Amino acid sequence: MNSVKKISVTLAALSAVAVMSVSAATVAEVEAMGQKVASAKAVEAPAVVSKLINAASKEDKQSVAVATLGAGLRSHPAALVSLLTSAIKAAPGATDALVDVALDTVPDSALTIVRVVSEVNPVKSDVALAAAVKRAPAKKSSLEREVAAVRARRIVATPTVAGAALGGGTVTQNPRSNPNPPTQVNPYGGADPGRP
Image (cartoon, helix red, strand yellow):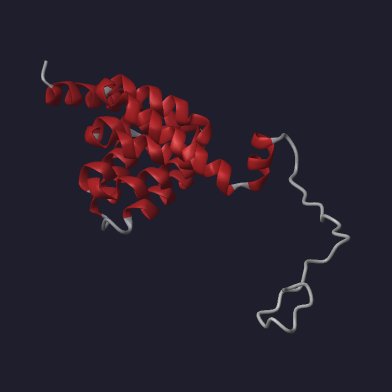
């Protein structure tokens, strides 16, 4: 089975799961939401995705998030980072399904998808890494390096996390008392009594 056929079968199965999980929203409503995202400009698509996910009921959030992200990525694949970020922020509980949709829709961007998930929802970074490695085992080391780099940036950027990582507490600086002041040095020979 070639990769295009595999991706289309996976997308069809994922769409079927998303449609079956819709409780209050009908299939037509979810398709209409997807059309809204697809018809929006690439710059406006992340805001539309976020608005539609936030407007959905709690039971429908995951199916709406999957449908809107999939439609957005199919029509605007270059907006992957902003679309995935807005979808994960609007529905953090659906991160696993959103990663699957993103990897199915834009499979060559596994590194970017793992980076975005690690930055936006660090708790799910291992899940995103596992899903990406399963689809692209040849990129395993670069994917792991990317997750490690994001974690390192997070530790350095957040002082409380850095303090906890380095010593388990807060960092304090105590001034040293210096009883002897530094020796005065003067460039003129006659002005410096300690100079020959």
